[in-house]
Length: 206
Length: 206
Image 1: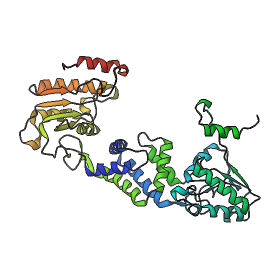
Image 2 (image 1 turned 180 degrees about the vertical axis):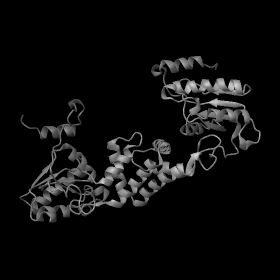
Image 3 (image 1 turned 45 degrees about the vertical axis):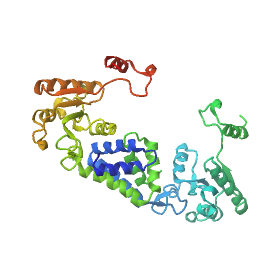
Image 4 (image 1 turned 90 degrees about the vertical axis):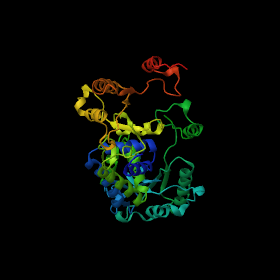
């Protein structure tokens, strides 16, 4: 019913997350109405991102070159490490402007049912950074590790594992976990019981 | 905060319709996790669709080559033309399997406020097809024109114009308009008054 090149583009769009066949079709027709240089810019950006982006040698964040923009930024506090599951978790934390330390990207979370064990994550590299300090920092040691894995079963299990391992290997380093509780703007009536339980357990004097 | 190539891809994604900055970011991270050949396939499909797709010489539908797949299909009934605003309108009509004639794509609808007049649409080409018959059909004449422009002010105005023009130039040709009324599965309670009014006006004996 449609030319092959249109079917191919719609099929390629439909492989993107959250894009069903109808949206893929709509995006394809949109592309056909746009100037050729705009479409070429998208195609070029797709190819380039795959060519240029690799892992940061220090923290495994996405990087163009050996170090990511955060590790390469000398204004970041090198004595605090924030541990996240994936590179996508860094952007929301950066948007808070609350954190000025460095990161460590695990590449996932412990999940025995999915076959993801400690050897599949960058845990040893984390412990090495904490114990030895980052190679590019010439002796500055880590004093705190903030574990910011997701508040899910896998994320919690990973946080507990990191807490236990660092308790043994670097007992002087503070290991903390992001607070769990009611999201700002939420109402009690619709809070789930686990979140509400966490909010009680983590209550603070005002 | 992010490498330039990632920012460029996110910006390019954000130009697609329905893709906000957050979704663009998510799509970018998704692309980074996919194999290189899958990403290259999308980039290639984008470039190819712009290179290969043009207007059908007969009906102005999207085509790879001089004629679209529908005009090139000899099993289609050449005596009926369905007039649509854009190529994207053809797919939903084809999905109904109710229509076996050919199409004519106007390239929009009459809208004086947007500066779109009769000269901006493929109206003269439509009238020529109706009066003279399609060049590739050697004398088969059009007996009916089904106007399937959108049920909007612009679409209705365009339909009225086509009806008036063809009434003068080809008085023997039946000009019809898609029925307006309640969508199947809708309930009366939530129908808007214009649609319900149309449903009354177009009521049929059962």
